[in-house]
Image 1: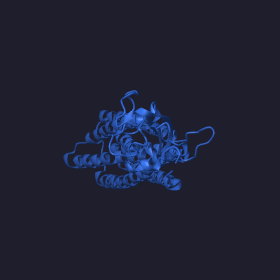
Image 2: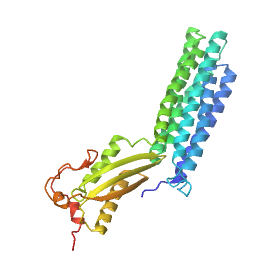
Image 3: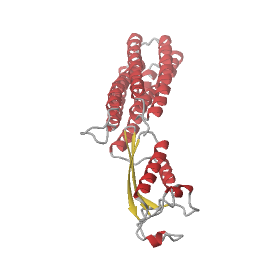
Image 4: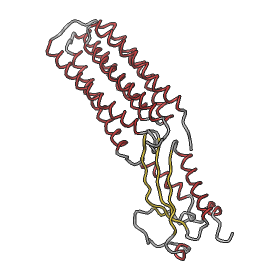
Length: 328
């Protein structure tokens, strides 16, 4: 089985925490100093990102713990739970930004120092983009939903930050003092949409949603490479827990096949699947063909439920030579 560098995974999550903390402090300080509600709104958003980054860091550490007696299937669900909490925090932050933005609109205009605020938000957008790009790369490398969630948090900061810049420039040129809180409201709506989308993904992971269709298609293709050693297969069940994939399936083989060869073929199929997917755990079950005479004909009739997967009846695959016949 393929193994992942746990220290590297935790290091990536920790890097996200440090950078998010720095951005939050800088935004809040300049927002208060300049009197900009939009910059303060961005600081609040970054503060929620910091909380979610800390939760993600904890989840990454916990999910990296190997399975034990209390958790025989590992600790991968910690990442899904963390993803759900992160999404809820985003939604809460969205509501608070909209509330305070509306309150600021009703309170009337107040003077704002524009020039320095533009540079603060441009710098924030640049840092967020760079860190998010790094975290997306780490999330792909370590197959971590928690790290990916943190990357999306930072990505959700980039466009709002640029929006604040546009708003501050418009305020300077057109004297539209109402534009600052309005941008804060739009930021709230934007991150609220992001929060609901992340909630859906986390929910799928918690209820053991099957792997993507393209991944299941790869698994079926690998098994079919072993036809006619594997005559048919069924009960393909897949799910993902953290960065671990779980695959269960039943093979149908000739009833007179030798047990040691059947075991070898199962090992070979599992190795092929492991080459395609990192951190995959596979459980296979072998069943004998119902009728040896039928199995030896060129085309087996459909004697089993429609839920089975039938591989193409092409010329015998080269893998067939690995299955010895009785008496060999």
